[in-house]
Length: 266
Image 1 (cartoon, rainbow, N blue to C red):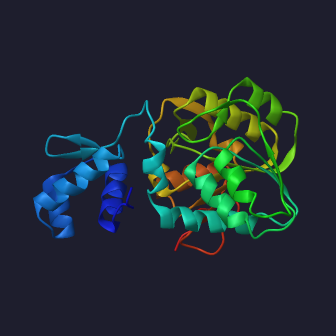
Image 2 (image 1 turned 90 degrees about the vertical axis):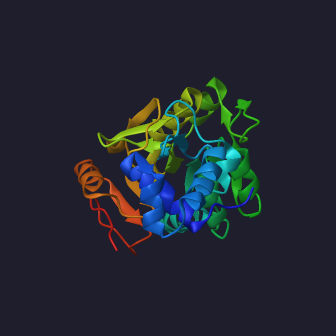
C-alpha cells in the first residue's frame, strides 16, 4: 500500500483538530477542486483513517482501531522523528520494554545502533528488528500471537512482564483525552501495557500529534503515570497545560529538548 500524500496527512490533522471538515472548506484551503478532495477522502476512508459523511469527513470509529497495514504507511516521517527523539533518550546498556504498535516499531529501528540493550517485548516485529544487532539480548513474552500485527497478548504475556523491573518502558497509544486519559482499543493489549507501566522505572510514551484528543473505548491509564512524551509536534495549549500539570516532560520534533512538565515548542 502506497504512503499517504502530504495533503492527505494535513487533511487528517485538520479532522483530528476539528472533528469534521467539509469538502468545500478543504478545497478552498488547499486550492484544489472538490473532486480532488473527494478522491483524497475516499482513499483515507478506504484505509479506515477517516470516516466519510455527507459533505465532508470526520473521525474514524472509537471502538475499532485503524488496520495495521494502513497504520504502517501513515505518517512515516513523523514516526521516524519521534523514534529518533526517543532513541536518543535511551542510553547504551539499558533495559527496556517495547510494546505493540507501529510507532514502537519505528523506535526499535532507531535503537538498532545502540550497544548492549536488554529488551523485553510482546511485539514480534520489534523482536525481528532488534535481532539485527547481535549485541542485544531480546526476550519475547509468551502468549497469544495476533496474526494481524504480530502482537502478543493474554495472561501469559502479563505474567511474564510482571517478573521484571526494567529501566524504561516505551509504549504506544491510540488516543490521549484532554482529561489525561490514555486510551486504546484492545482490552487484552491494554492489560499488557499496564503491566509494562507498573514495572518500568521510567515510562516513555511515543505518539504522533493525531493521537491528541482521539477517542478510543478502553482506558489504559492516565498521563500522570507517564514520565516522558515523545511526539512530532508540540501539543495545543490546552493539552500542554494538562501535561504540565501531570509533570510530563514533552519532547517534540519541533525542538531539541524539553524540560520536565513543559511542552517543547518550535
